[in-house]
Image (cartoon, rainbow, N blue to C red; front, side, top):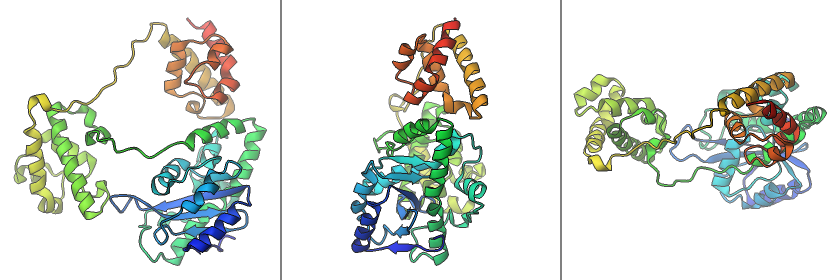
Amino acid sequence: MEDQYRIIETETELADLVTELESVPVFAVDLEADSMHHFKEKVCLLQLATSRISVLIDPLVMSDLSALRPAFANPKIKKVFHGADYDVRSLYRDFEIDVHHLFDTQLASMFLGIRETGLDAVLQNRFDVKLDKKFQRKDWSVRPLPAEMLAYAAKDAIYLVRLAEELETELTAKSRLFWVEEECALLSRVRPPENNGNPLFLKSKGAGKLKRIELAVLEELLKLRRTIASRKDRPLFKVFGNGSLIKIATRGPRTLNSLERLRELSPRQVAMHGKDVITAVKKGFEVPPDKLPTYPRKKAPQLPPQVPDRIQALKGWRDRRAAELELDPPLLLTKAQLTAVATDCPRSIKAVNALPDLKNWQKKEFGREIAGILKKAK
């Protein structure tokens, strides 16, 4: 089936596919998008595969994929992804497709202690299949897509059903399948971020170190970048790099010569957008003192003096257990969970089960151990 796939481009073909999907217990899902090439990213190709068929759905040819929603929402049909977070968000954003009964083979690999969990590494180690990633960063919105790109896309999904079967068997043998199932259920609920009107600098790495006036300048620069990117239909990073805008905001050049001397923008960028950049910088400096933005900072809660000792006791236990299980320690308990549990200090299984910060699999598998550690702690 590796080189055999069909392309879905009509409503009739899609309806036939949905009928096929309704008769299978599991199908695999992958997608290709154009986030590296356009201002507003979109799904450009959707790949589905069962043990018998491999199909490519072109949403740029037929944008209405609502017929797929029941199959994706059906809890009796397992949907296999590898690294599902981005795909789940994208499917909901573009098509309002809600995924139920998700199984993520990357998560499964992590909970089996596999260190290299990229799809190419997993398939090569499992099935001696080598994926050619040369098309990964291509612009998938271009039409027509070359035959070799279509074949590449189809290949990403066709091994996932078989991979999921093997991983489930191994997870069951280690009594970890229900760990992954709960993690996958939580993963299926992720959604794309909402545009809530917050300042753009909140999503700009390094902005938290800036002074208030520099934040005002940075916000104007980020608005300018967004305007240019939207007009040119280019991703933000291809207009100006984030680091360059941070440096310009801190140095505050008021003339083209001073902007050029910074060497944060190329001569071409200065020639095309230099005047607009200087205008944005000046506009930021004109913000009145009482209107200057403030970077929101969450104050760390004042912890009782015993909590750090409890954290260390829990961390020591977690790291030992993770080594025994051959797992990455944060899979068992994250840093945030360590702090939350140490603060609440449950000393009985009943108290552990009442904690909102732990997942059910963590409570069931390690609840008694956690309570025992905290009984001995200060």
